[in-house]
Amino acid sequence: MKQWNASLYKEKHAFVFEYGNSLIEWLQPKAGERILDLGCGTGELTARLAASGAKVTGMDSSPAMISTASVHYPNVEFVVGNATSFTLPGQYDAIFSNATLHWVREKEMAIARMYAHLKKGGRLVMEMGGKGNVSDILTALEKAMQLHGYSYRPFWYFPSVGEYTTLLEQAGFRVNQVNYFDRITQLADPENGIIDWLKMFGNHFFENVPEKDQYDIMQQVQHDLYPTNFRNGRWYSEYVRLRLIAVKA
Image 1 (cartoon, rainbow, N blue to C red):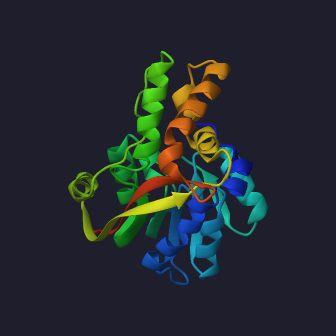
Image 2 (image 1 turned 90 degrees about the horizontal axis):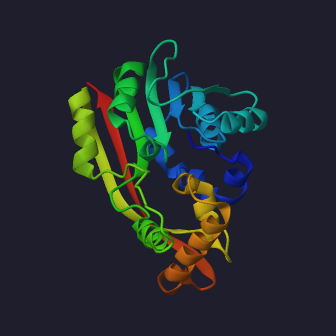
């Protein structure tokens, strides 16, 4: 299981939850609704949902993330739970999930858990990495790892529109709205944006790589991406997002 650095995430990768603010507009939370924020991270979006008057539970598989969220938002309920196996009391009017489900490779299990926890007519409002997400970084990483004698194995699940909507429909959801779009994203660190990004989100690629070689690989990736991904003094990456609303039929 990935170990998250909650402080680094909150301080230097806030774009993850800041982009999620517009997803709340898709959800349109209402006072009194029960809402589950699946993969809540450090809780910023959970707190925004709670401010609408909804009864919100934030859930994340990372104890570090939940601990940070609980400290910053003590009046919001947070729990540790895994997307593929969670069991919570009762059912929800809505499940909200931002930038989480591409971490879940057992996607059918996660979809089944979400379906089970929604009331009939309840809605799933989610955004995840779509097909082609951060392909620039991953292509350069695969090349750099091979040059240093290591094998690259894909980790994330970045589906096409057809792939994911089919899985939802097979589980019993009706997909009502889909948006699949490019989002060129400015990275946090103006000097070592690619290295910083890999340290935050890609450490699972280096589990069997000695520390010295890890840094050499990350430097190689950043060097190779400089001509295309460094512009006007800042680093960028090619994010591709899949956003949708589905209803439990």
